[in-house]
Length: 314
Image (tube, rainbow, N blue to C red; front, side):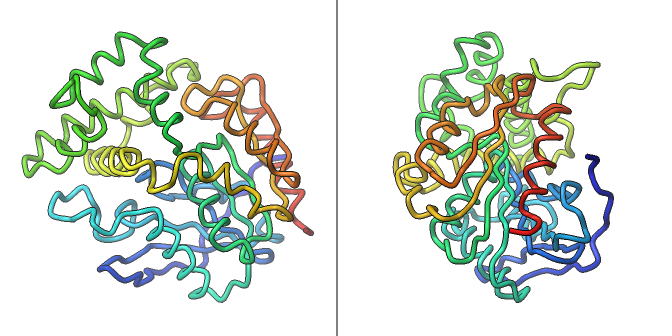
């Protein structure tokens, strides 16, 4: 199976309230799909579109508020994060569904996108026909602590550099970075964003071959600031979810078919959480890819295409 090549045939900006304009685009025809990008703050781009046969699926991609082509962008420190919570992102998704006239849709999400897809599905299960999650992350306190503190055991030098970038290296690193990333001094914001993204790159560095490095640091200066600012904001608040809420409330998704695809070598989001989700969710299947980490591999790409194809007629 090969990825599909298709361009959007419709685009728009949705007025979501709070002064937010949410960018969306759509392509193909058939079963509705919503692609939920990672980050937070990564932007939708063309995330997920190539995995769906345009003759079988109507694929909607959107940029979560504050990032990508949505407006206003949070790289500007004058843009408050007052209206940035998981609940507000869920409301944006539901407004988009109504705006597009979709009765229910398949959710496709990866990494942070899995957090948001699960949170939306648990709030609106009647609007979800199925779920495909890649590199699932639920933003629970133990996962966030592992990603930004626990991994120092494996990457001590890189973590010390990340820690040194915070205003109080012995305090709350995420809260400290949040303050730096809201500084009116662009140089301060950019330095903090680069330090943040250097840590994110270090965590996935073992996954890259052939000289491909610096995935998180490869964006424009504004993209780096946006990503780091929203990551620090959401993860310092554990995405406004109670401890392990998405796992605890998985019963709300019983009856919704799902496939969870996860790399065994994923350091960013270790396999255990995906395994716990699948174990508690009778309608979910867990597919473990031995040669993949958080960013995937050719065999993971094949597994994703195969999982999506199973939803063509469901």
